[in-house]
Image (cartoon, rainbow over all chains, first blue to last red; front, top):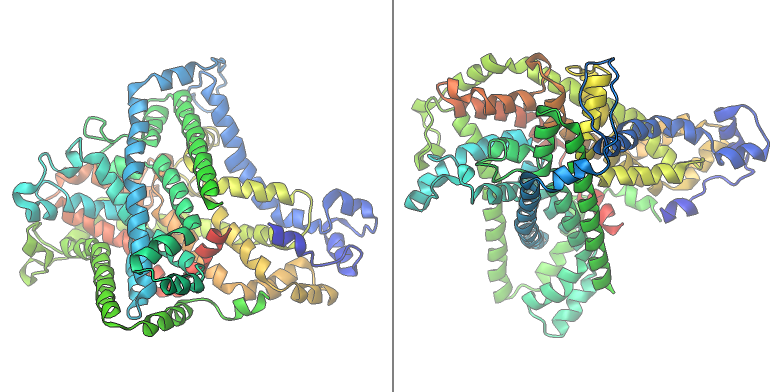
Length: 325
Length: 306
């Protein structure tokens, strides 16, 4: 953002600035136009479609969601107007006392507890390895990234096959296989979702760490080795602090992913099963809001979810900023 | 200062150059051992990442499902394309692919036209409301889409009656904000002298954008196209909400419905499901492999550096 301020391409009274201004709103040479619309008002025209898009698809629906969560909103036939009485915090009371909703937030917690450490450890480890490798770099990078670019629905299909009760994984494990099998086992269902997401997104985070590693000054490694630090020691005191910003981003994105989980519980564990052991807030929003026609409670779940995400993200940011000092 | 960075597009080669001296400089007995460890870890990782895809293809070609360890190797007697015929008969594969294509194409078109305009304006032009728009873009990147899912459903499917239409599918994704962000970052890196020169020569903003800025940010365009492509192509939740008729569903949705409902009624359900999964996976993976050299980590890095 700071770079944009320093990069003022054309001085105020430059002829080109006026030409650009003229294209936007007639041949005005008065500085009034500049004061009202900025130096290059044509920018408003160019950015208008995107601004309208954000207003219509993002801002208005979010306002609408908050409004719905405070009213008794229900679906009607198009064109029919019915009153949506204001009910205060009733929907929030319903949502926050619903054990199914509380359980779904707990499941996101389980997801984060498994996903974050696994992602950080595996992607940082593989990124460091990839950074040292000379041969096959391109191959490895591509191989790690393939799950990330593939549709969840497609890879969920293979996981269903691999982890079914008679699937390949259980065939290899033999008597060690859990019963009931992984995806229909209430203990394993949520950890399997965490594992699936970790596997699918790891490639993205490997590339993220790989990019961050390029920014760690080489001199730090040299001075560490001069000081007699071994590989592990220099990894801990040079690499790990050097990629802290990337780690903070992993945390933030993991929280956003956890808050967004839908496809996995819907398909991989057959609708948050078994017996609701792997439900997520978004799955409940779908079930309550669209299947059961209660958009008000669904919106309340959504608002609570976003508030929680923002709180956790802020705490996360505070923590990483403090440890940077 | 920024010009050379654009000329030498950062990619594999540069990364290699950076790492080689470090490794060569420290070839001792211990580090050779360590290099084997590194390669071992990398290969194990690659197997874990790629095996499910290999298995997806093998199992989609099996006549009868074989989940034993031996089934992971293709056997000539058990090979068939029947599963593909089966899934095609159940889903109308071509129609589903066409729907995915129209959905993805619409999003790509919207992002490339309006996203580039927006990114250019945000980077290069001074106009009222630029700061607000930039903050709004960042907010879109952070706030989960799911919050607006219910109201968007009410608006688009109920109020506007756009359920089961391509327009209804495309609208919430019409301009990819990540792509706008990438465009803006790349436009910012361009040397401003070029633009001053163009303006002095009397070129309008659109002409400057078309003949000067766009050719210089071609790598960003490719990255953004790839990124924007995999979004709608792989998207499940929104088209799943908005389409009820199978004739309008993209492949990800019709395959998911097939997985959760009809799988019991076929002879080899997993064979057919995996055949559908292969068809769904191939376009995105193929595009990525074709252009992966351009899909460079620097784009992600610019996000890390902040």
